[in-house]
Image (tube, rainbow, N blue to C red; front, top):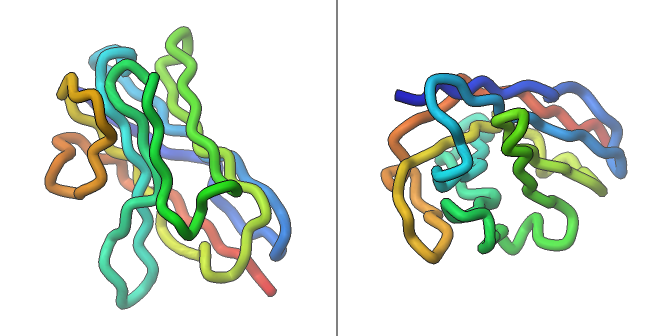
Length: 126
């Protein structure tokens, strides 16, 4: 069983940056695939980016490509989502998710993940 806790959300002006953290306990994340998703009010939860179990493959939604970066610190058992050049359309509740699947590709669907955090709110003002 893996417990995930997101942090780092907040209110930021357009063009600003935030770094979200996804801290894991119960198991080491080093062999888990991890994904970041977001959900805005009235919209479905959507894939933002993720990495496969080895961390060697990453993938991003077109809407964030070039602005967001995922990284993993195995020593801290934490995965990060660095978000730059934020715009109001990035406003959402951000979730991290994990699953113990050793695929060579990034899992992009919500049902592909077994464990979820509670989310952290990101609000970007114009």
